[in-house]
Length: 147
Image (cartoon, rainbow, N blue to C red; front, side, top):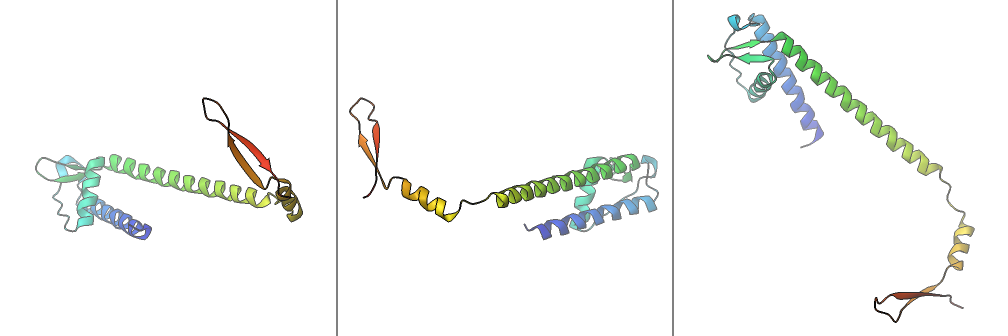
């Protein structure tokens, strides 16, 4: 699922949630005595209602009526807001770390070409491994330079 689809789904869920809350407020269903029947037709509305009931922001009575618990709804919104800020802070921290690493790598000077060539020619051209006599079968290293 792409990030655009996730964002669109989240926007639909929030819009549906606000519509449910507005419907309950307009009906005056803010207590068990004034509960009303909701009939969410579309899938996003049903999902938003299930989520609000799970979070305790909307209370479902045994008769199938619903009412809005304003305190629980406010707590639900604060939780969502704090999660958003934590996510944004984490993303910003990641960007800062990546930028610092990139800048540090860019500032590390590369060895001049003459030094690299000298180091390469001073190194052995051939590395020979010869088995040693012994129980562990170790190998002895010999470096040989071409003439």
